[in-house]
Length: 370
Ligand code: PLP
Image (cartoon, rainbow, N blue to C red):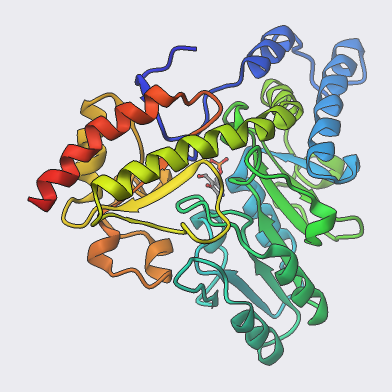
């Protein structure tokens, strides 16, 4: 499939639409009924929405009635952070959470170590000495570094201290298996466009028995947990992407192999470059690399001129000069953090794409070293 720009290595910002999503959405686009209407057109729309809900529940090993559709990951995080916070005396989040989670948390952060992994001892210290009960947020995989977090252990600590726990799994979807029951979290957020669905569709999946207060009011949709007419085409695409996850996961070893080749070249030809999370569990598609002396903006612009799309840190922070809060939390020097880029591969990445990136990026590294 052709993309513009030619060499797209920014899958963590958004992934190209999967062919199966395109055909499912195209087939159902004329399904215009309102899923809340009782007549035939409404029932047809309801059927496709419920079909997608089943696929999403199966993808994360949750019950179908616990999938709440939202407009994406940002809204799912907001719904969790506001809807679970009732009665909580404290809200804590890991220092590397996405801004859509951090926006709902005051100053309380769970520290991460230099590898970008949350410090479970710090979490336990805060849970045992701080106000109780608490709501905590720990993401499954970080969007900038790809580093995977010990969510199941954090959930165990949450249970021990009577806390609730929300998990942002937006970047993990389609890249590593997600089992909500095994993770033991109270809620989990997903976003369709990060793994081949359309933008504007996401979900908050909740555990059985969790009391979630609605944020969007004024309608009975989604079992009164999220008012508003459902985004039927987006949800159809979300369901098709969820069904394609088995295929996406089967493709990950190939992608991880491409990334390993890319990182070997980088380390060999630009020894001054530093790749984050090399020795810890990381999404197989993500490389976050610092090239000392060359700003992220310069790298992104030079790569763009060569037809290669990557990001400076997270997509949400692109355009901002501020160094990434994720790298700063890992103890990276602020000047160094301003020279980081994120290269993220995906289902349609080919060896030629990696070569095109290296051809454009390695001269930048050599000129900086000269
Ligand atoms: N959470 C994480 C980890 C993300 O990477 C993103 C998007 O970059 C979001 C949440 C927000 O998702 P959406 O773009 O669907 O609002």
